Length: 237
Image (cartoon, rainbow, N blue to C red; front, side, top):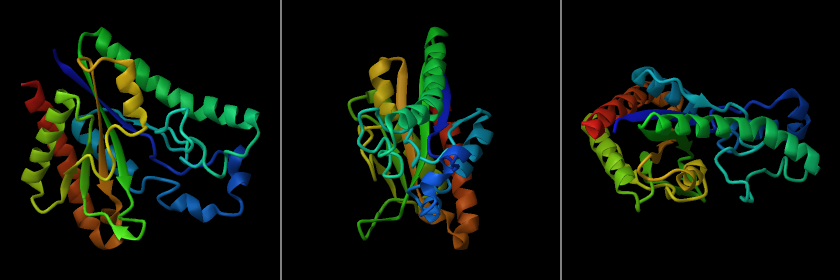
C-alpha cells in the first residue's frame, strides 16, 4: 500500500473577517501573540510544502475567532472574545470557518483511502518558548498516538532523519503536548482506521522565529522539510 501525504496548518494566520473585527476592538494586540496565531507556522508549512511539492491546507483566520484544532465539545473552541456571543453568531462563525476546513481534509482522506492508499496527515504547529513562567526544554516535538505502531514508527524515523541534519536540536516525542490530546488528528483517528490513516503533528519552538535567529530559522525549516521527505521515502520502502 502506498501513502499520500496531507499537510495542514490550522493556526496559520491571525486574520479577522471585517464583520467580526469589533470583537477585538479593545485588545487588537492579542492577535499578534501566540494566542492569536502559531507564529512562524505559515512560513514553515509553505517551506515543507515546497520541498514535498504538496499543496497545504491552510486556515489563516485567527484561532481566537474559533479554534479549528479543537473538538466541538472543547471549552476552548471559542475564546473569551467569541464564547459570549449570541448562539446565531457562534453558529455563523462555526459554519463559515470551522466546518469547511475540516470537511475538506476529511474528504481528502476519504479519497486517498478510496484510492487504496494510506493517508499520512501532518499538522504543522508552533509553540511559545515560555509557559507558566518556565522555559520549555524542547525545540521540535513529534506528536502521535503511542498506541499506533505505524504513527510511532513514522515519528521515530522522522526524528532520526532530522537529528542527522541538526544534531544539536532538542527533539522530543509527544512534547510539549501529548498526541492524544483534544485536537484534529485525535478526532480523525476516530473517523478512519489506523490501517488507513496516520495522524501526526509537528510542534516547533517559536524562539527560532526571533529576528536574531533568522538564518537558523531558514535552515531549520529546510531541515524539517527535507527530513520529512526522507522519512516518507523510507517509510514507503
